[in-house]
Length: 187
Image (cartoon, rainbow, N blue to C red):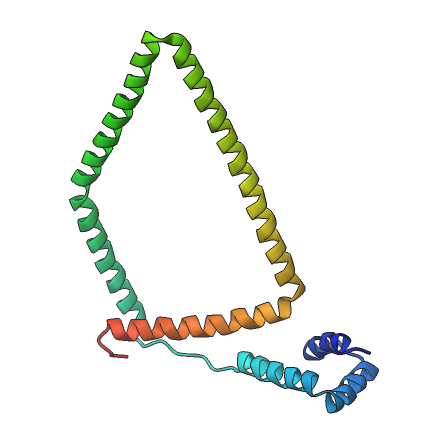
């Protein structure tokens, strides 16, 4: 068998899906092949780390801290949004005026020379149609790319789950660190 076949056996070994013969073949190959043996040991370390049953206990007043922080954020958001309504209104009025002036000017010019207006309108409509076709084509390409990446992740889902597990632990550690820092270093 090739090393590629044994790599599949390694994953089956950790899933406990190997029969006795396949397991014996894998162990024999691991004694001979340094690359597969290194990969097996690295994967074993990762799986052992992920399977550790160590839970991080949040502080006793964690819920109270989170709720008070949410209340503070809501207050800040409300104050911020109330202060910016005037700016938003001015911005909305400005955009509306620009829109009215631009299209009003186009209509006025169109009344002077209707043939030219029709030609320009047709040119704009064709460009909009081409833009929409290009956007749809690009959207399809993006969807195909996302589906291809998803399929390749599905094919190697073992490694994906391991990476996601590690990212979960890292994210959890960063979250708790941020919570501790925002509370002045108190637990």
